[in-house]
Length: 248
Image (cartoon, rainbow, N blue to C red; front, side):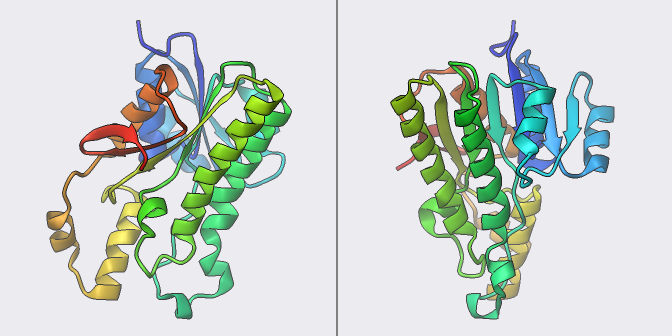
């Protein structure tokens, strides 16, 4: 029997990349899994290729998105992995629209769903995991606009939400998880690697060869399952090739 048998898992941003790996990991542990994303085609491909997955096409940055998602499946575990591709240009070359893209997507989706989890509220014992980034801890490269700050804000949101759950006696568990290394097979990873090539002239193959302690999307999926089923103390975590650990 899987470690999530009988549990409902909702992955917002679950149609591709890291989100899809999280959904697949939860499905493999016996959960009923709903993958939520904006792109209907990617969701249809996921459903075609993966027996048992449920899908819902919703824009996670729309105010009504949490109500639509929770009406489709009330989660025991809610994972927020939705996000925009970061920009790839020096700060002085960016418009505010480009600079703030990750605030308007990653942070807004996290805010809306954390707020809804507290207001509804979700049933006691529910776990909410926000997928952040190692850039939140390092500051990221100088060509990624507001990306690092947005991912750091997700960490703050998890902490703020946990304090409100505790204050209100809701028995909800809010956590954030930061994958520490660029993952070449994902959209964000490719954007980052291409950004280093354009900004610093580092060839993608050389950049990848120089990376150490790399995690894969499957490692992130396993880390989310571990957070959803374990009793780890704290709210901020990171995952690398060395495994899951508390964030510094």
